[in-house]
Length: 291
Image (tube, rainbow, N blue to C red):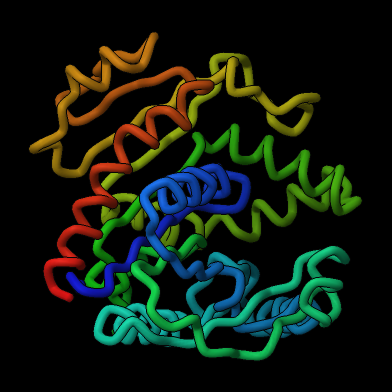
């Protein structure tokens, strides 16, 4: 970890709400005058879209039927660790972008499903914010939590996550329900082995739970809205967290355990603002004292 060049990692699977967290960080950084550099986890995938399809087929021939973007071997985790370490030491590093769609292709000048070229990150930034699948991954020679100053986990309960994936892949990508089910089954071993364990390494977890029936996500017609959800917020170390203040400021919230608070789904942004702002300011103040 680095006092002078802090690293913040946001870990969660696609559709979990990591984009909401990034938006909240954007607001805090803008309001507090903090210059941040953003790194997307997709950019550290080992394969582009076409190469990943080929890699899945080849892995299957060798008996590995669960290769996915959750898999450590499908990602450049050594490079990601080097980035965290380099940024923490000097505030420098390289990044690239993964192009998801036509709009991003027009912006970056490369086709959807491919990567841009590696480039040096902007100089003189205050903090690095990573958002992706592996921000708190530990395994073998990889220990990303060791290099991050603040680790945030964002994860919905599993049926809600499946509902969100099914809707996104059917509506935006044209996949059948059966095709999405096959993807979920293929990913499940690595989700259990490599995604879930990261949430014991994070400092704060935001877990969204629906308050409507999602018992069969494969036939669900709608994704539960924020008004139909609650969010469980768990602090790894609750020391110094003013729970009484949070409960008084967030209408409808309550403590469920000594280290956990539950808030209405439509109060998530407010809860994040109240919880994350002082933590970010603490990192920023520490950085300024080191300058």
